[in-house]
Figure 1 (cartoon, rainbow over the protein chains, first blue to last red):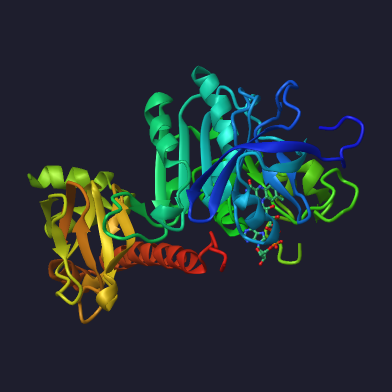
Figure 2 (figure 1 turned 120 degrees about the vertical axis):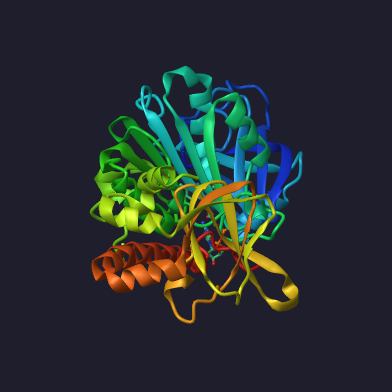
Length: 278
Length: 156
Ligand SMILES: Cc1cc2nc3c(=O)[nH]c(=O)nc-3n(C[C@H](O)[C@H](O)[C@H](O)COP(=O)(O)OP(=O)(O)OC[C@H]3O[C@@H](n4cnc5c(N)ncnc54)[C@H](O)[C@@H]3O)c2cc1C
């Protein structure tokens, strides 16, 4: 982060761009002036990405925190800024502010079984947490990755997910909402997978990231298998402007998502989570 | 498969969890062991629903057809799941197709035999119905989530 003024973007250029699905792209960035000590960040943190002349959006960092020399973002093209962002080509320039926000408690989770439940683009902010756990795989018990998407074509990072399963002993369960016959995997909602895992609930930490309704019902399923709210962490999204707790755009009850979040311990927001008016 | 083994398999299946042993023994009388090879059709929409299945291992796909658009898999079931409740609901016809995606082992329960036992013993009927209602509620909830399209593909 710019130590003098966190509102001032630093110029980066696109090193590589890859299309993950029909509407999701991964950009790898490097500092325009080269050098620097890479881009250290914690899993779950985000940057404000500024497309010159178009606007600025919060996007989670989706790369490997143990290899901070490359800055990676996975973005779904949904509107004005993200669509332009996804069209940038290697060599193009953009502004970056960050990293901002809280992180997944990957170190605190050592010694536990881990359950990661994620849907859609929600795997992007969790990928850095997985990378960090892989670097110290022996410090964790079972690691489950329960991942849901709309259709097989919307699944992210599937080559990697296959590798993780074997290389790092990750129990992956992937599901989609509907599929054609050539899909040989699960069809159904991701929350349904929670009841089918075998973990020790009092020594388990759960990380959830996805649409709010999916996170809400994932909590219901976690309660059923005995994982308590103070062992559950979720990542929240709200519209954001300054990202440093000044403007109040991303206020969520008494919290600002940009600085108190995006990752929250569930018991700390339980009273407002899912409330219609918030 | 021996009666004893069928009884053991049923007792370990989540669907029959904490069911009175006496009732389970009655149900075993309607049970048989089945194996479906990968790709094998289990039943088709419109056929009479003579059985339902307690899945032990494998994966079963439930499909619906929409004319020329080809079949869509709307749900898959696996270990610990139960396939079908049409055996309980007149006119006892399947409302979708089911095929095994991979080698699948299951216990088939004869619907007619079970309906008869439930009619003779309403307490058994109540026990079974409560379990099926739970299942239907879960599936209905899941279907609503799927309908909501929660990963919301944004219109371009
Ligand atoms: C902390 C944080 C981390 C985030 N991380 C990521 C990330 O890693 N990858 C990523 O792709 N996005 C991420 N987002 C969401 C991203 O910031 C928004 O998609 C983006 O701000 C939309 O801006 P836009 O100008 O492209 O769309 P707008 O022009 O503002 O919106 C266009 C249309 O898209 C809809 N829309 C806006 N946001 C979303 C959304 N999130 N999902 C579906 N529809 C939406 C709007 O309702 C509107 O109809 C994150 C958000 C937050 C707060």
